[in-house]
Image 1: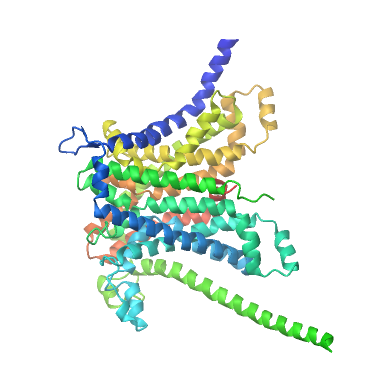
Image 2 (image 1 turned 120 degrees about the vertical axis):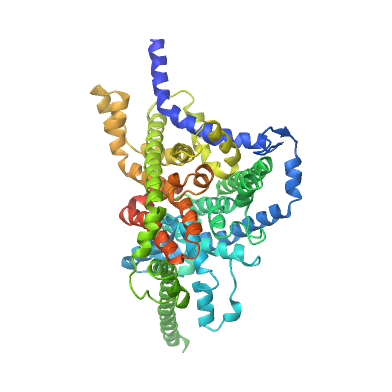
Length: 297
Length: 290
């Protein structure tokens, strides 16, 4: 009897085991190993690892490119929270509240479209839009008499990262908006009707009903957007490779460049640990905030 | 005296607010129209520039091409894009099969069986969602090198599977928890095995979420860049996102060919999205919302 039960347990485990193994071996183990490796120095030319304690972290603290990359990630996070999460929520509410149902689907589909395109394609597209000679951005500025505002957008230290951040808003706002639409559609209509009978304006209804009742989604989108902002890599690598003069690096591109161009693998692992701590802490804080604040109905 | 004045004032106010409402609606539609243009025009420009000559692009970048030159698209296609497309297809399809297959099996066991330690196991799998590829890049590079998988499809298929299993299990598990046990019990009475129940009962009933999960995996694998950049070196194995970088370096100043390549690269996912829009959005909603 017991042996049969054991056998059954073993065969049941076989259903879970492959998934668990994949995650443990290729997701958890590397994440933990990264913390260990960040205490060593080695390179592809001298592959023998030598333990250096916290030296990589001290080097990080003294590295101006690390700090400017971190600043760029923070700028990415702040702008994305305002435009994608804030703007996405307002857009979602507007589509659901003001726009005729037959037009809603059209707006939703079009605004979501950029999110299904790869960041490489969108990155290149914007690379060309920002191009100083034939790019539409400068062409448009010249056409309306604002020629003095033209820039080599990706070629100047002052504008590169902001131009990339702008691209990212173009790509992702529709995506966040669609998720807010889903959340808004789950709010019972009677709540709005009751509020309007009581004389509430649409703006009041938005503040008093919509925002509290999509709180779960709001928190989730904040987590996704903020963590995403600290993981940015693809579009920066495609558009500027961190240039000019390393001004548009993010932690991700600086990690990649340190590892595979500068051959400082331990140093790159230390950058990885910093990203790990930031994204992990962000998730924990925001999950805590979410608890107890969500409204049930 | 004051009494009759009130309704007059009231109706005046409501007339104003109605006019304001109309104006507000107009403003909203104008803003939305501008947003639609700002999304669609760059895409239109991308396709149109694909038909131009370099000279046309420089002399008149807003204008339409003087003729539809398919040759740019043919050049892009022949100079690598067809190869990149095939590679992307292989990696995407393979990782859909492994990710959705393994996740569905795991979700089935975690929702329908009494496995010892199923709580901690669930937590361990779902917890993987908090870890991102970037933070593990250096150890992964060593691991994949040690396994001899650098510059193979396997590197990408394995990593795309591993990093997407947590989210996909989360998605499918939530759905399977809502399936009633009655059908399953009937199958047990008929003497079906666990695997038969999974294949013949649970999987067909989970079809909507399986489709959503597959679509989201397709979007991820088709567009993934970091792993594809780090682990693939040969021209012949590059997927689209990284292949486009090469295309640009080879067609340095022949921009229209690059535009054509971008348009070709973007098209498949746009088509898939248009066809599977509902499943797509349901997947996102189930995955992120409740």
